[in-house]
Length: 481
Ligand code: PLP
Image (spheres, rainbow, N blue to C red):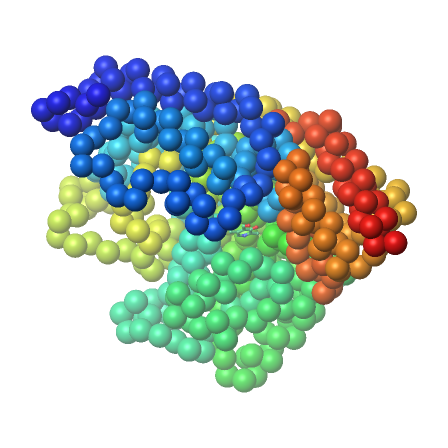
């Protein structure tokens, strides 16, 4: 119970209940494989199980924790080894414990001065990450650039766009407002966060050109070039290109080196979105997928997808931090302090949209130290090998086909019986609770996506999934016969 006079949880009770919570999470991990992967509740079912109003008198923590069971039917088990949907969101012990300490310290890292360790650890860890991924030296803090943690790849692309917008308009937009001539480019396969960012930045979604892709779903540089020239001829001002290392739909790899060379020639800001697949660059053998990264003005990837770090954690690097800071800097009187004015410190509030910021570097630091680069590489390689093995089974199957080349851990495939059949197959697989896959449209064809990346996914899970997919397809075929 809380301290009866202050209502707070005492340190002693916190110690006891904290252990209970850690036990709860550990027990959850021990049983997660046995739970139906995708939540199967109806809309409103979870709310109906909850008390209609908050309690007037505080409740024992045991009662609150016990009520987690009311939520569990509505939890989709992203940490299940049978989760093959969307992209992984693989958290881990060290990440959770880092997050717990961050919550415990509860510091606000908006300024260096509001908790110097929060800023300095972030700078330090982002330098580690730049080296671990083989990124160019210009993204490190001892250059004109540097890295920081954003909440998401969506925020990262917004910040890149805002910095590029300022640079393209001689730092006038912040002062004077819009420029409706600025045009941005990306492929038709680019994540929708860019379109959203164009709207938020006031540049207008209509000023985003979605460039056609080739047979591997990668951006066509000839089409990019043609569109840029057409826009220039029309009196518009091309300023920004987003290239993707591993598109959401099919893990397509845009040709970064060729795009980068064009951007350099045309003086366009190049942002690289490597949300999930950036993690693969930990392994030297996969780095060729982002050849040309040295052309980039900014780069982002999400350890909260495939690097064992719980949401949220996006690593965002810029080559010219002054451009970003010019776009986002504010200095109301109450934030003035000696350290900021000395110019000797980083104030990350000027690198992203919100003012406040959590101590997210802790969990990333814990993950990097606990696994070590070798440990992380080990898992990336294992996931890629499992996915490649799955792709090989599809290649050898008479009834299924690959719809896109699988460069890493995502396999896009379909049954040869057409869209309606594949839709039915997916629904039935997910309803079984035994696995969870999602879909996409590629060349207007309904396509199943099989993404490997959960911590405990092993060959036996992938094999069982493949057997289930084949059996379920056979069942549907015989029902339809
Ligand atoms: N970019 C790509 C390529 C993605 O696959 C995703 C998410 O699926 C995103 C951006 C958005 O990620 P976030 O949730 O970190 O904004």
